[in-house]
Length: 364
Image (cartoon, rainbow, N blue to C red; front, side, top):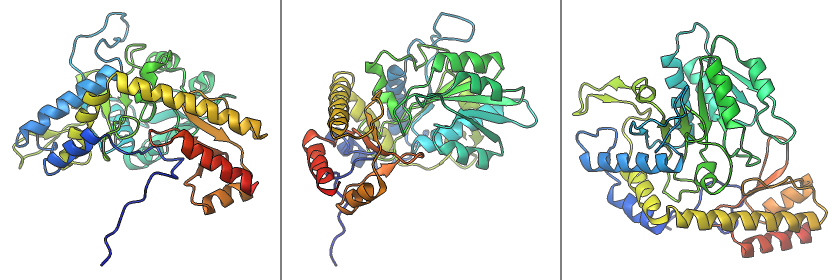
């Protein structure tokens, strides 16, 4: 029987997954059979998970986090864990907010640019999801969010690196709005979290008293799949997720998935050890240059291209052109409003994009 082989990345343009770093791949294999869901039994991977959370917290400004009502950062250790990905982290953020709130009909307010995982969270947890319009540049409209918030709002969501346009919402304003309503504020930085430290955006715990954040090592962090991340500013965020585990050595568990492989944990630590900060900075600068070059190439051919904020290029391709490129083997997807998107992940090179442009020229 012929042995199956995974698809290569040589024509993958719209995925937010990429080749893991070699150190991450090796570490994942070593810790593949360990279970961070039972930290008392698997003590070594538990230590690694604390290192992973510390590393994510460093990226996300949680080494000196802002506190509600104070400009002085807390010295409390960061709280969180390595999830299966952004979906689990976002569901858990909603769950934590629900469990810490005392309202009858809880609702979550999020911009229409928020990830579809919040739809899943609302359905699973029995909360209302209120999605509001974005502004003309695809960022959360603070006035629209404010109009949707009421006494039953438990969580306001902001996105730091939207999956369609790469936009960063006005996080400090959303945090203020949430806290004024006695709600929590969650930032979804699943994709953008490993890029934004090298920009001047205000998006993390050090810029505003954010309550929780999603940040995924298996995207631009170069860890293996699955390796997401969830961070809380205060221990109460994690405590609200804990359930008793009577048959394990560990007495409680906060994760959603229960048993999970230590591969993601170990690979996240290995990747951050290898790449933070200089390796990640170089990759962000490379991806940013590549996105701006590619956008200019497309504009030079007469295409309508959105402004680049983080390294995603969104272009208006007519349906016959889009389908012809897909038929040529290019793994290309559309935004919700029908535009083609190209994500400058580490595997995407200028040579690869030159080949794409040649095929684009041929099928127009």
